[in-house]
Image (tube, rainbow, N blue to C red; front, side):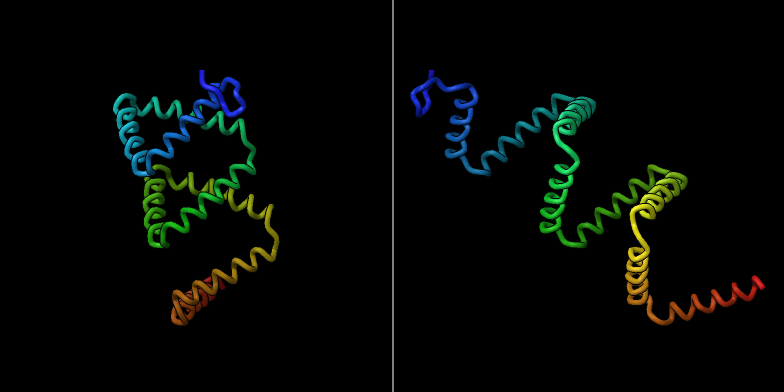
Length: 167
Protein backbone atom coordinates (compact mmCIF):
# COMPACT_ATOMS: atom_id res chain seq x y z
CA UNK A 1 0.00 0.00 0.00
CA UNK A 2 1.18 3.53 -0.76
CA UNK A 3 2.41 5.77 2.02
CA UNK A 4 2.04 9.51 2.44
CA UNK A 5 4.70 12.04 3.54
CA UNK A 6 4.22 11.11 7.21
CA UNK A 7 5.17 7.50 6.43
CA UNK A 8 1.71 6.18 7.22
CA UNK A 9 -0.70 4.33 4.97
CA UNK A 10 -2.75 6.58 2.71
CA UNK A 11 -6.51 6.53 2.83
CA UNK A 12 -8.44 5.87 -0.36
CA UNK A 13 -9.33 9.56 -0.48
CA UNK A 14 -5.68 10.64 -0.17
CA UNK A 15 -4.58 8.19 -2.85
CA UNK A 16 -7.36 9.39 -5.15
CA UNK A 17 -6.43 13.02 -4.60
CA UNK A 18 -2.76 12.30 -5.26
CA UNK A 19 -3.59 10.42 -8.46
CA UNK A 20 -5.92 13.20 -9.58
CA UNK A 21 -3.22 15.80 -9.05
CA UNK A 22 -0.71 13.76 -11.11
CA UNK A 23 -3.19 13.39 -13.98
CA UNK A 24 -4.06 17.09 -13.79
CA UNK A 25 -0.38 17.99 -14.12
CA UNK A 26 0.07 15.64 -17.07
CA UNK A 27 -2.85 16.81 -19.30
CA UNK A 28 -4.25 20.17 -20.37
CA UNK A 29 -7.77 21.62 -20.35
CA UNK A 30 -8.43 20.56 -23.94
CA UNK A 31 -7.75 16.91 -23.06
CA UNK A 32 -10.28 16.94 -20.23
CA UNK A 33 -12.88 18.67 -22.40
CA UNK A 34 -12.40 16.04 -25.10
CA UNK A 35 -12.71 13.04 -22.79
CA UNK A 36 -15.63 14.68 -21.00
CA UNK A 37 -17.42 15.14 -24.34
CA UNK A 38 -16.80 11.50 -25.30
CA UNK A 39 -18.00 10.25 -21.92
CA UNK A 40 -21.08 12.44 -22.07
CA UNK A 41 -21.97 11.10 -25.51
CA UNK A 42 -21.60 7.47 -24.35
CA UNK A 43 -23.81 8.04 -21.32
CA UNK A 44 -26.35 9.96 -23.41
CA UNK A 45 -26.57 7.05 -25.86
CA UNK A 46 -27.01 4.54 -23.04
CA UNK A 47 -29.86 6.21 -21.09
CA UNK A 48 -33.17 7.84 -21.98
CA UNK A 49 -34.57 11.25 -21.03
CA UNK A 50 -36.49 9.83 -18.05
CA UNK A 51 -33.26 8.53 -16.49
CA UNK A 52 -31.66 11.97 -16.61
CA UNK A 53 -34.81 13.59 -15.19
CA UNK A 54 -34.78 11.13 -12.27
CA UNK A 55 -31.11 11.55 -11.40
CA UNK A 56 -31.39 15.31 -11.86
CA UNK A 57 -34.30 15.42 -9.44
CA UNK A 58 -32.44 13.27 -6.88
CA UNK A 59 -29.34 15.42 -7.16
CA UNK A 60 -31.38 18.60 -6.88
CA UNK A 61 -33.14 17.34 -3.75
CA UNK A 62 -29.83 16.31 -2.16
CA UNK A 63 -28.27 19.70 -2.83
CA UNK A 64 -31.41 21.51 -1.69
CA UNK A 65 -31.35 19.62 1.61
CA UNK A 66 -27.65 20.40 2.10
CA UNK A 67 -27.67 24.19 1.55
CA UNK A 68 -29.79 27.13 2.68
CA UNK A 69 -31.42 29.85 0.59
CA UNK A 70 -28.53 32.26 1.12
CA UNK A 71 -26.15 29.79 -0.56
CA UNK A 72 -28.34 29.59 -3.66
CA UNK A 73 -28.70 33.38 -3.77
CA UNK A 74 -24.91 33.75 -3.66
CA UNK A 75 -24.17 31.19 -6.37
CA UNK A 76 -27.03 32.53 -8.48
CA UNK A 77 -25.59 36.03 -8.24
CA UNK A 78 -22.08 34.79 -9.14
CA UNK A 79 -23.42 32.81 -12.07
CA UNK A 80 -25.49 35.74 -13.26
CA UNK A 81 -22.48 38.06 -13.13
CA UNK A 82 -20.34 35.56 -15.02
CA UNK A 83 -22.95 35.12 -17.74
CA UNK A 84 -23.54 38.88 -17.90
CA UNK A 85 -19.83 39.47 -18.48
CA UNK A 86 -19.72 36.81 -21.19
CA UNK A 87 -22.67 37.90 -23.39
CA UNK A 88 -24.02 41.17 -24.79
CA UNK A 89 -27.50 42.63 -24.53
CA UNK A 90 -28.53 41.28 -27.95
CA UNK A 91 -27.93 37.72 -26.69
CA UNK A 92 -30.18 38.24 -23.68
CA UNK A 93 -32.89 39.85 -25.81
CA UNK A 94 -32.79 36.86 -28.17
CA UNK A 95 -32.97 34.19 -25.46
CA UNK A 96 -35.58 36.21 -23.57
CA UNK A 97 -37.75 36.34 -26.68
CA UNK A 98 -37.36 32.59 -27.26
CA UNK A 99 -38.16 31.83 -23.63
CA UNK A 100 -41.15 34.15 -23.68
CA UNK A 101 -42.53 32.50 -26.80
CA UNK A 102 -42.05 29.03 -25.32
CA UNK A 103 -43.82 29.98 -22.11
CA UNK A 104 -46.55 31.82 -24.00
CA UNK A 105 -47.25 28.71 -26.06
CA UNK A 106 -47.39 26.57 -22.93
CA UNK A 107 -49.82 28.63 -20.80
CA UNK A 108 -53.09 30.47 -21.36
CA UNK A 109 -53.97 34.06 -20.50
CA UNK A 110 -55.59 33.07 -17.20
CA UNK A 111 -52.25 31.69 -15.97
CA UNK A 112 -50.48 34.98 -16.69
CA UNK A 113 -53.27 36.97 -15.02
CA UNK A 114 -52.94 34.82 -11.89
CA UNK A 115 -49.16 35.09 -11.61
CA UNK A 116 -49.32 38.80 -12.41
CA UNK A 117 -51.83 39.32 -9.62
CA UNK A 118 -49.71 37.31 -7.15
CA UNK A 119 -46.60 39.24 -8.12
CA UNK A 120 -48.40 42.55 -7.77
CA UNK A 121 -49.77 41.62 -4.35
CA UNK A 122 -46.36 40.46 -3.12
CA UNK A 123 -44.67 43.61 -4.42
CA UNK A 124 -47.29 45.86 -2.83
CA UNK A 125 -46.67 44.19 0.53
CA UNK A 126 -42.90 44.51 0.27
CA UNK A 127 -42.49 47.96 -1.30
CA UNK A 128 -43.37 51.47 -0.17
CA UNK A 129 -44.74 54.60 -1.87
CA UNK A 130 -41.24 55.81 -2.82
CA UNK A 131 -40.58 52.61 -4.77
CA UNK A 132 -43.66 53.17 -6.92
CA UNK A 133 -42.79 56.83 -7.44
CA UNK A 134 -39.30 55.85 -8.58
CA UNK A 135 -40.42 53.15 -11.02
CA UNK A 136 -43.18 55.41 -12.32
CA UNK A 137 -40.65 58.14 -13.03
CA UNK A 138 -38.29 55.68 -14.76
CA UNK A 139 -41.16 54.33 -16.86
CA UNK A 140 -42.21 57.85 -17.81
CA UNK A 141 -38.67 58.78 -18.81
CA UNK A 142 -38.26 55.62 -20.87
CA UNK A 143 -41.59 56.18 -22.62
CA UNK A 144 -40.68 59.81 -23.30
CA UNK A 145 -37.33 58.81 -24.81
CA UNK A 146 -38.92 56.08 -26.89
CA UNK A 147 -42.01 57.87 -28.22
CA UNK A 148 -41.45 61.63 -28.03
CA UNK A 149 -43.88 64.57 -27.82
CA UNK A 150 -46.30 63.40 -30.51
CA UNK A 151 -47.13 60.30 -28.52
CA UNK A 152 -48.17 62.37 -25.49
CA UNK A 153 -50.23 64.74 -27.64
CA UNK A 154 -52.01 61.79 -29.21
CA UNK A 155 -52.83 60.01 -25.94
CA UNK A 156 -53.81 63.33 -24.39
CA UNK A 157 -56.35 63.93 -27.14
CA UNK A 158 -57.70 60.38 -26.81
CA UNK A 159 -58.00 60.81 -23.06
CA UNK A 160 -59.80 64.11 -23.51
CA UNK A 161 -62.28 62.58 -25.95
CA UNK A 162 -63.01 59.70 -23.57
CA UNK A 163 -63.53 62.11 -20.67
CA UNK A 164 -66.03 64.13 -22.73
CA UNK A 165 -67.99 61.00 -23.67
CA UNK A 166 -68.38 60.00 -20.02
CA UNK A 167 -70.08 63.30 -19.07
